[in-house]
Length: 212
Image (cartoon, rainbow, N blue to C red; front, side, top):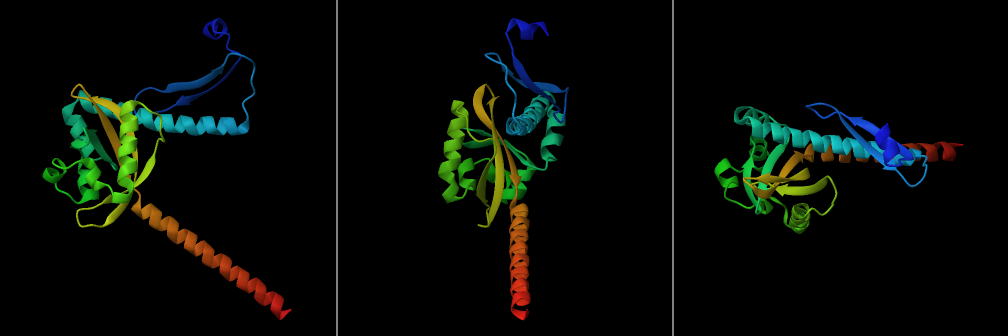
């Protein structure tokens, strides 16, 4: 294309992104200084980055669509599998039913407490730091893991993604929170079973050697 010639692009890597709604997007990187061969690791990293951007774009498009139609937004948000939360000045400004299910707090209670109070003491400082980084535009990890403390004191493991948005003409964060407690339990059980199998195989091997 002429634009590549005009900008002296020597090498390019690109992929098509398919968000959950809307038209496809194109994501690419250009190398202008010299010709470049993209290694397998670089291509794999590019693919992983594309998947993350696709998820982010999907979430942003979802939020845009939510703002367009109050009736549609209420249905989509309330029926989402993940908790969707608008956080502004560290307070919870808007949330869906999934947050009520995860936290065990009532809607009135959630509207009156800072979001940080839902976070385990050992994770709170890290969460507040990440909150500030997102508001400042500082680059940080896309997905973070934290522990949430339910109203009854039990702990739920969660993964969260934060997106900087404008809410009522003021900076805010849109948080997507997934409860991964059961996934962690299943992964722990799987590792335990694998360790048991390996131990049994080791003992069996020793028995064969001992028996001659």
